[in-house]
Image (cartoon, rainbow, N blue to C red; front, side, top):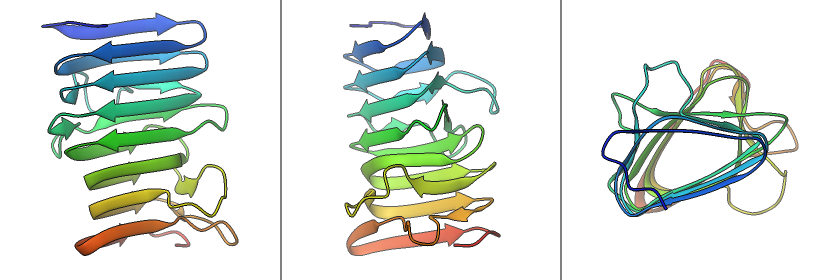
Length: 170
């Protein structure tokens, strides 16, 4: 369990399981394989805009607070080696994948604003399940959303919205 008033920096050779009972200002968490990052508060970006907050093959991130990143300062992921990102939030999630594709296992929360500036937003496992479940969903990707034969499944609530921006093949 982590209790930090400042910023969090962690490096692990393989896996890391980190839990916090409050807000976390994440500078850099880097793992060789899988990161489980869970907080009852918000997860916030303590870096410059282009630096990854979390790096690893599989990134499992859960925030019960108001924010997972902010609209002005996104939480930056960098999943490696064809890994995946899984997001759960009780509030708003503003996520940017640093390099390549944002490969989602799934993402759930009221507001999901996801960006892949250097690739696509993809279904990590090309399965039939819903990858994105939110009330207000915004997707931006340089190279497209999903691929032919491997669509990205998005569900919103009755009064929800979906916004998609991509110059690629959506």
